[in-house]
Length: 215
Image 1 (tube, helix red, strand yellow):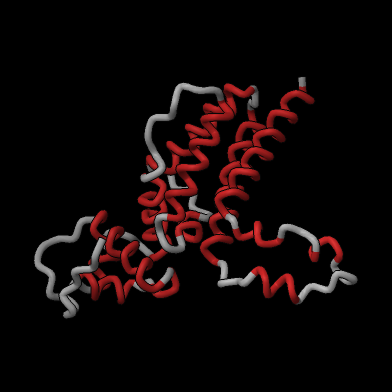
Image 2 (image 1 turned 60 degrees about the vertical axis):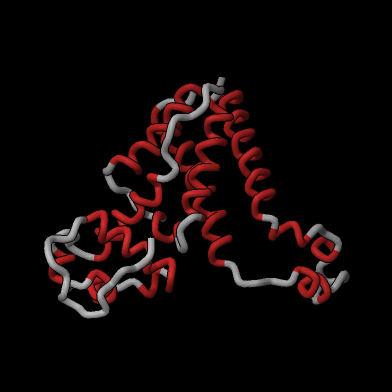
């Protein structure tokens, strides 16, 4: 979304829709990062005054929760007819794409436990897969939290990383002090697609092994 602010606070005519506020807030984050988002800057972009925003969202945290729901909404949709592992992989991939599609997406979504449809649908979809796998009770909840936290952590690191030259890093490593790192496939650390896929396979294999040991 482009920001169509009037450049003059308080000039907007008519009420503001909550989804318009959320879309504009996400667009502002795309431009300047999450730290740049303030209710004053947002109201200026919308051509209104902060009190109009506080009538819709009682504070900035409530706004960020709504932004998290908007980010998660793009991950929703029917899953393929497949076993639980494949469905977890598809859902995790969609979550990752949704978070990467928004600047600071992982920071926006992290710690959000709203009771609105997108958040609940993601949790319910993953829980259905864990139920099919054989997890019950608190273990099913822990399993979906593990998957979600893995996706969130990977995206958080990818979005927060600074530019690194793997060759320069390798050149700075002493083979005597760091023999394993010095001879490792260190550049692969920045292949985020491959490492995400690898980690997800390891994660679901661990879930499968945990189930087998409990039977």
